[in-house]
Length: 240
Image (cartoon, rainbow, N blue to C red; front, top):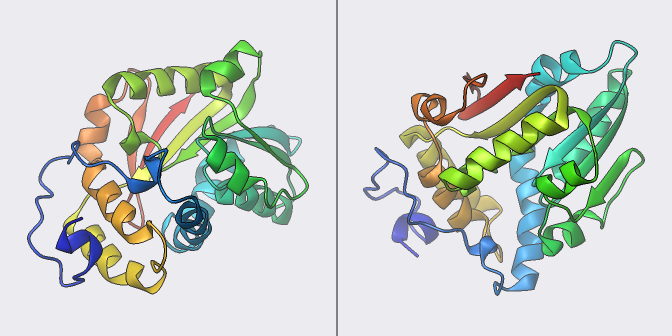
């Protein structure tokens, strides 16, 4: 663990000019501390609510892609602890939509964390995108949060291709936009919620692994577009 990741919020010199693909997040380790992991999922729900920008993305990119009758299905791929899936159902209801959200993640630890709270309209499944396709599933909108930066080139291409098959209207994948300002803000702000978790270390590593807007556009397949979103976000979007 570096000083920048774990201790010193003054942000020592860190190279943010290129993606740090050699870094791996602690929560991705199958042998990581399960108690710290469970706390991390809960704390990331707080962090995401503050910085992910999904409330705006719901209104500008998700809701307009749903059927005109207000009913629809949304898939959250790589749902982690399930906070986005729960938020989407809540926002949908507030805006007069009747939406079913399925949160899918192949990691049993994530599904265990997610299923501790399953409000009406939300279902969590331990499944991969390939398994959902094999089962014949289709959704109006497919979304993900903080998944793209985890994936290698082949994994990312497969993930996006699967998303295309699963979505009948739109795919929308949101991730962090790598920048010094994002890194600095997170290095300071995460100290408030990081105790006993991987939130600080993994968040900083995520930023270093993430894309700038031009980098994301360069790796997206034909038919996809990259958009900048606030705060410190990039979106990968494809309309069916």
